[in-house]
Length: 468
Image 1 (cartoon, rainbow, N blue to C red):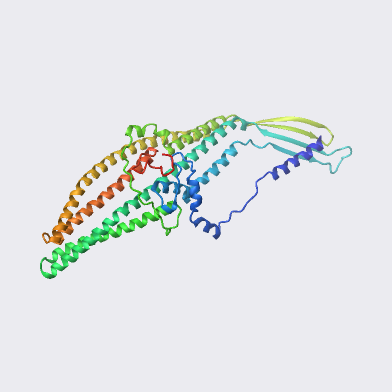
Image 2 (image 1 turned 60 degrees about the vertical axis):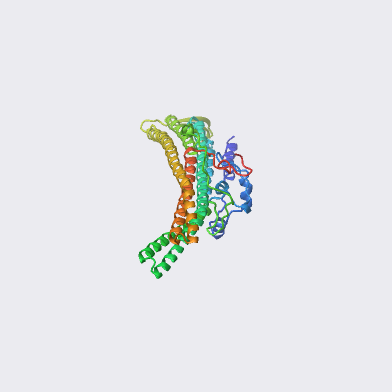
């Protein structure tokens, strides 16, 4: 039996070594940099977009040749955004924790020999001592450790989904900004042309003595404002385009095609405030993630409390001394909790649980307040839109009347161009109000944790072939 045990312990050690993981290099070299900076393969993205699984995003059927709608850009961003790849790496970490939580501590096996090497060694034999030990205390918290790790894994999945949702909304917002700027830029170019024509007409009138230099200075100032406004809009269009490219994982110079006909949503039929805040804690992904994190921490508190139980270890032994006396026995070791009874671990786990509890309540309160504030802001913007819409036809009619009168000589060109500039300014303000309404609608979706009915293109988030 001694020989059997002597062979078993080294054998177990060899098997344990053979079952260990091996190292695989992951070089961070120039080739890795090129792979990281390469634009996404849109063919692969098209396949993935058609079968994406997300609590809030629906699958979409892409046709890159026709361009992307804002909702399709949102899904593409979730699939290709580099920062989201970093966030998803957390899943590997939490899976490792789940695996670790499901493992029991290894038993401890030992083997030693006592070989007579001198003195009165006649009749002596080689002694040995074989032991096998196991920590029983770990069994008390085994199920709680697995529950805590499982809840933490769910919390991480929900937190990643929340980050994906935010990136998707950021991509939609950038696309809406680009669409709004593409509506506003032609108006700004017309306003700049009108201001330039006014300046030229005023300069000509100054040369003939019809007007003074004061009118020319005012016309020059108006043209400078129109020119500066146009340059700022062109700069903003480039900035928003680059921001959208970055969200989609595209290089800065990559041409981005938004689908023709895509427009800004106006969310005509929003749910009431009561509906939007009802069950908010069960709908917003970050709040759900916080709930799962709270459940995990509650399990950790229970683990800390159970860990106050004295550590117990058992040892089984089989030995032979040099006088050839063979013994078989067992031992029990109990850690006496006289000084350290785990008070610090319990206090820390309890305080952390309380912090998560209050964090959830604070976030829920803030989310409810955000929904109320955004709805109030939307109501104000819609009133301003009504006023702007109502004033625009009359301004357009006045501008057209002045233009006809100027062509017939009944009115001067400066007055006609001023009327035209007033109409274009109000039209640009209307586009900006619609862009502000789109931003507030997206903010409301984030605050309420759900997609809301969009515009004539269908529910926000749905697209051709997608589920409404």
